[in-house]
Length: 216
Image 1 (cartoon, rainbow, N blue to C red):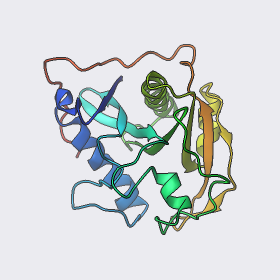
Image 2 (image 1 turned 180 degrees about the vertical axis):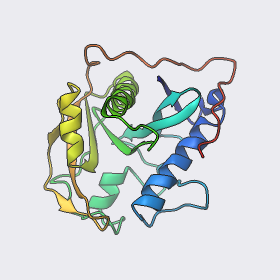
Image 3 (image 1 turned 90 degrees about the horizontal axis):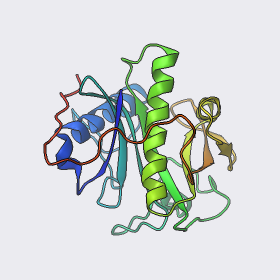
Image 4 (image 1 turned 30 degrees about the horizontal axis):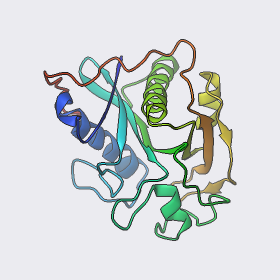
């Protein structure tokens, strides 16, 4: 497995990897969980996939098998900021406005969203390695932009999975049950330094494009 990190300015260095990530998101969030979010027959893409977003993806044999998105809590793009702040301000119908105790806007805090891993990862070891690489990339890009902490609205079991990998994740909001039947809460973890044993992103933008085949 290998990790790549990029934003829309550097996405062209990675062939179809970004589009394939959007396809993986559609398969999970729309087809499996039934979320009512913007999508077509192939991909899911929302208002937070904009030039302020950064991405950490994991490839295996050139195929996207996992990834997540991150952006600063200072982000503003048109009428939107970042997902949790928009939820607190009542702009997102499916997330409770009281999901966070306060409205966070700080250079030191970045939000992570749309974490997904492929069903092709069939063992606990494979999924753990993939998650470790995804989070490693998120930490890297956020820390490079001055962040000291990451937060996300995530299923509760993710906190345990992150802790098992050595990440100091904590719940900072009250949990709620979503329409998909899963319990979610806001999690937070330090982003100031890389966890011991977690490699840096294995691919940085290079002049030659790296092509990933379309996820089936």
